[in-house]
Each structure stands twice: as C-alpha cells, then as structure tokens.
Amino acid sequence: MKVLVALKEVGDPAVAVHVAAGDESVQREGVGGVINPFDEIALEAAIGLKEQGLVAEVVAVSVGPLVWEGSLRTALAMGADRAILLRTDSVLEPLQVAKALAACAIREAVGLILLGRQGVDHDWGVTGPMTAGILGWPQATCVSRFGLVRGYGEVVREVDGGGQLLRLPLPAVVSCDLGLNTPRYASLPNIMKARSKPLEIRVLPQSADPSWEILYYGPPVQRSSGRRVASVEELAEQLDQAGVLP
Amino acid sequence: MLASDRLGGPSALTARAVAAGTLLGRVDLLAAGSRSGEKAEAGRRIQGVDAVLLVNHSDAFPPSTENLAWLIQGMAGDYRWILAVHDAFGADLIPRVGGLLEISPVTQVNAILAPDVCTRPVYAGQAVARVILKKFPALLTVRPTAFAPAATIHALAPVLEVSLPAAVVSGRHQGYRSSPNQRPDLSEAAVIVAGGQGLESAHSFAAVEALADQLGGAVGATRGAVDAGLASSDLQIGQTGQIVAPDLYIGLGISGAIQHLAGIKDAGIIVAINHDPNAPLHAVADYSLVADLFDAAPRLGEAILARKKGR
Ligand SMILES: Cc1cc2nc3c(=O)[nH]c(=O)nc-3n(C[C@H](O)[C@H](O)[C@H](O)COP(=O)(O)OP(=O)(O)OC[C@H]3O[C@@H](n4cnc5c(N)ncnc54)[C@H](O)[C@@H]3O)c2cc1C
Figure (cartoon, protein in one colour):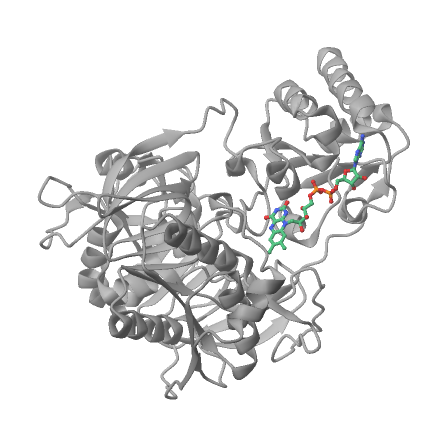
C-alpha cells in the first residue's frame, strides 16, 4: 500500500507577527518557512509505518509555490520515498487544496492519506476532512494513536473530555495531532541521499469561484495591562474584591 | 445548527452556538450522533431554537461523521448557514460537509458582524481576519468562548424526526475513553488553574491540582508541561489545545508564549505567578505576582479559604 502525506510550509511560528489595522495580507517576508509542525507528525507516522513493513511507499505532496520545494526535500531527507509539488502561485482556499490532494490520491492509487490536523498559520483545520468528503473515504481527525491492523486503521481521536476509538476501513484520511509521535531529524547522510530522490513538479490549473474572501486583517483586541501585586495576601484581596472567588 | 457533542452525549456548548446562530436567522437545531434523543430534549429548551430536527440512528444508519455529513449535504439546500461549535464533533463534521458541497468552511468564528461578514483569529491570535462569505449555504464553526450561552426557557420547541438517506462507508465507532479527570471541563469552568514547565522541578502537577481543588476549578496546562509529561494532552490550553474563557485564570510557572496566550485571551481575569519578572504572561495579566510558585500557590489557597470563611 502507498501512503500520501500532505504537507504545507508555514512561516516559523517562533517569529512574532505584527499587523496594523486594515492590512490586506499578513506580511511574513523574510520569515523562514518550516514544515507545518502537524504535517511533520503525519510524515513521521508514515515513515514509521514503512519501517514496520506495513506500507510500501511514502509519497509527500505539497500544494503551493515553488519555494516549498525546500520543505519537500526535507521530507525526502526524513524518509519519504518520492515528492510531488503541485505548483501554484496563488493563495488557495482549502477547497482547492483538498481537491488537488484528492485528485493526486486517486492518480497515485494510495490507500491512506496522512496530514496535520491544522496549519499553524491560518488554523483552518479543514483540509483533511474536506479531502475525505471529496473522495467519499472514511476519516479520522485529531488522531493521537494510529495503527494498521488487518487492513483497518485503528485510531484514537482526541475529543473534548477524552478519546474516541475508531476503526477505519481503508482507503481513509487521517489528520494527526501532537501526541502521535515526535518527528525525527534528518541526518546528514540522509540529507545527501535526498538530493537524488525523485521530486516531481506539476503546475496546478488556476481556479476561481471562492467560498469567501478575506477583506482584511487587523490586530487582535488588546487586553489592558494589569498591575503587579506585592504579596499573596494582596492578590487574594484583589481577587475577592473582583468577585471571582467561589 | 448542529447540536454539540461531548463524549457521545449532550454538551452545554450548544447554547453558545445557538446564540451565534440567532445573530443570523431562525435556528433549526439538528440533534444527531449518539444519544441524539437527549440532545434533542436539551436543545428544545434553548431560547432561539425554532425547531429540533432529530436523527434517530439505527443499525441501518449508525452515528458517524461520514453518515451525518451525507445527511447534512442532502438538507443543505434549505439553509443559508450551517453552523456548529468548533469542538471535536463540529470541527470534524462541518469540513466534510464542505468537501461534499464544494464550499470551504470558515472555522473558529469569534464574531458575526453582518449576515455575510464574520471574523476569526489567525496566526495564533496575533491577527484577526475579517471574512466576507461568498458561497451559500455558508459553513461556519464558532468558538464557544466568544458567545455567551442562550438562555434556557420553559417553552419547548417542536421535535421533528428527520428522514434518513442510505448509510455510507464509515469508520466504526469502538467507544470512548473518558479521561480520569474528575474536575470541571476546561470549556465550561469558571476557574482554571494552569501549570507550565515551572512545575517540572517538582516532577508533579500537585501544586496546580491542589489550588484548582481549593477553588473548585479545572486544571489546565501548557504544551511545555504536556511535553514534559506533567499533564495529559487533553488539558493543554492554547492555539493547538483548548480555547478557554473562565472568569478567573491563574497561571503557575508559565512563561506566556504566543501560542499559549492564544487560548486564554477571552478569560475574565488573568493572574500570573512566575518568579521571572520578564515572563510575557506578566505583561498580559490583570494581576501579576513575581514569586516562587511552590511558595505562593499553597499560601494563595489558604488566603482564599480564609477569606471564604470570613465572609
Ligand atoms: C506551532 C506551535 C503550537 C503551539 N501550541 C501551543 C499551545 O496550544 N499551548 C501552549 O501552551 N503552548 C504551545 N506551543 C508551545 C509554546 O510556544 C511554548 O513553548 C510553551 O507554551 C511554553 O510552556 P511553558 O510556559 O510551560 O514553559 P516555559 O516557557 O519553559 O516557561 C516556564 C516558566 O516557568 C517559570 N518558572 C520556573 N520555575 C518557577 C518557579 N519555581 N516559580 C515560578 N515560576 C517558575 C519560568 O520563569 C518560566 O517563565 C506551541 C508551539 C508551536 C511552535
């Protein structure tokens, strides 16, 4: 079985973002890109399955601009067998990404799509389940445990108040949460080896008909800065006066 | 409006989503998934619900995201907006409906400004995007913390049974594993005591739990604390954990990283207890105390109990 891992690049989340009111886009120029941390977890999960002999090939796919080639090389260095960049220079809404991934999954005849539960830039959190809907495949989102058992995906989803256990018939789409694993670093020899692994670039056709448009960005509501209290007693007194104590 | 779900049963968050829905129009509440009858009974008492649409599941149509998405896309033509709480149920289901209808949802909506304009936070809450809806039915998930719950009333909305399509290929539900946590849920707690990596030197979360219990509150954690094995992942607050809005949030040994702050900005009062005066949490806190948490937290608990007795 082949596994498709979808990954996107995000501006380094460790670098702060500043927006002025009415900005048309959030400027993150000069902020280096990294693989979206959740997608890295998805990739680690796929590589792990391959190492266990449960899958034959791991294909990493990105839908984005040419500069994302670097992240796909990193994915190859981590252990993906092949990479595909579905190249576009426009900013896509999630539906276009999901459609492109669905088409790629059919073309590659994969049995499983793994991806992050959300991109940590826009936090939409929709690409996995949208792709599953388009394909008509079963889905599991926010997965913190995953195993392939006798041709099924056995998963635990993170849900409010605990976990949900699901058995997924394959092919299926699984979006990965933090607890699933800790992604490996690419070793130097593997970075060298990745240079000769296949990375295919295909141009994604343009599409219009947006579901919505982002009018502009603004700064969040600022909380007024508070006061420093000198002692535990003063703190308790202030909280009491504020009426928030039980 | 999809009724919210907590571990396969009704959830108090539904009333918050209804409050958001009534800003847009009349609300039909879809009671679906396991224990849908209980969700319908609770939902018909929420102010602003016009009718409850009940999905009576059976072996022929078991509760699953795949089945419900299929059902909702069949009903979508009757509605201009389809909403759910952004919880593990709604955030799983609404985007799948989006895949079927070929409409990208707008998730984590935190304000509705007009019938076709809403806002949502991006970049871990460092910016807010204003979005204009172009395709309808619009698909929205709303942040429960951003909307005060609609009231419970005596009048009962009618419950209508939904006719069901044939089932589709689905994951098979194998059960829930509820976390052993006996304290209030983070999403609903009036008081939250959260701990960070400052607790690591004690190798335990006991100081956080003790103060939370004295206040009858919930326990929360940073990702740092989760990664250090001090707290379970369902307690994580922040951009990639839960978004909370208690009346009182007390952060112990928490630096206040952007990603953590993203989850607590809607709290009523924020208290920071951290021995580093430069920790960013101090800068957003309403009350900040520069102190060692292992000394301050137990004393704060005692001082609060003493005040309670004095009242
Ligand atoms: C994409 C992404 C998503 C993330 N999502 C989240 C998220 O959802 N939630 C989240 O919390 N984090 C998240 N993080 C991690 C976040 O960036 C921080 O690393 C994390 O919040 C730090 O946790 P902390 O405050 O416990 O630890 P630290 O930053 O190490 O802070 C510990 C603090 O404890 C104080 N301290 C130590 N000992 C004591 C003592 N005895 N008394 C008093 N104070 C003491 C120290 O002064 C320090 O300020 C995310 C990161 C990334 C990159």
